[in-house]
Length: 267
Image (cartoon, helix red, strand yellow):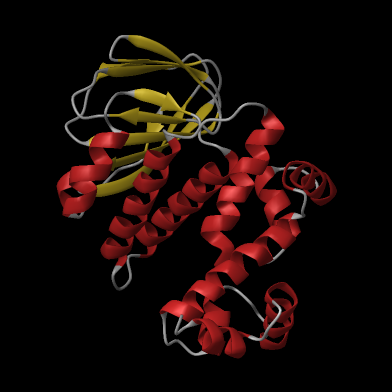
């Protein structure tokens, strides 16, 4: 078993385990989140046995006794941090929710993808240590904890309904950052054609049609509630082309953005 050296406050390091390796029962004073990069096994968390597999997370509150038994060669990313280094709102609201009990967590496709990307950012910041790297670590950790906290409340019936519901929520919250159907399909791990088929089956429109609907809805709100220039709103919502934005807005709303703002802002 190999474990890289770690540093205080917030640290992310790799821990490698061979088949049949055993990490004896122990506990830590800091909060820990372990991400299983590859491999499988079991862990004991506060006396309860849990199954470990690739892409799952161990949530370990301070003082909780835990151990790991590897059934195969296993690579684990260990995120350890002192909660006092984070903002007061994260300490008081998010951390008690995430660490209310020790558990093994399997995030949905989108949340898992976002958390993995945040782990990559942490590794980059930790290794380069250029200007503001510690601030960047705190920010990415806070974002990661919020994603995990939100995931606790998510439920779904079957796989396809879960996929499209996750996709719908993703579009509603990341509308400014989505570029193509291929990108969405890759996040779920299915083909573009199948994604469009199941999304249309549930919502009677394609993912990009829904994306446009969400963006135009946000644009209408900004037009009436702010004094922002239309070109700024267009950019903020994720439209790459101003002419495309004007064409889509008029097609969906019936009038241009300028006319819409003038007509409805005073009402």
